[in-house]
Image (cartoon, rainbow, N blue to C red; front, side, top):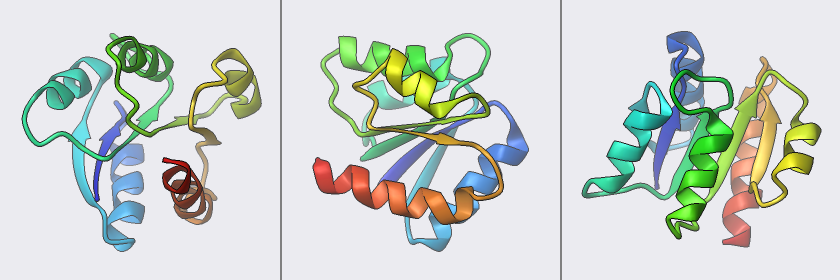
Length: 119
């Protein structure tokens, strides 16, 4: 399984990647939504996108919307320091939205399983 991790914060990005690699996922990294779009437009693609919400250039929610506007049904998990429920209410088609904190190591694997089981 190939996962694209999109986050402008190097520490957060590496923390997320460490959790995913411990679970056996292959990770590709992008520092922002523009770079993510370029990666997704290229060859190879990925099976899941995990993106931070607040990034320069294109926010995580705007990245999600752009992918859906292009017809992509790629599973998408949004990580945020804001209220996840509020973002899910704003964009109910998101596959999942998680609060980005130190419990991510426990919650992310469970949410990935739930999201992928629906696809």
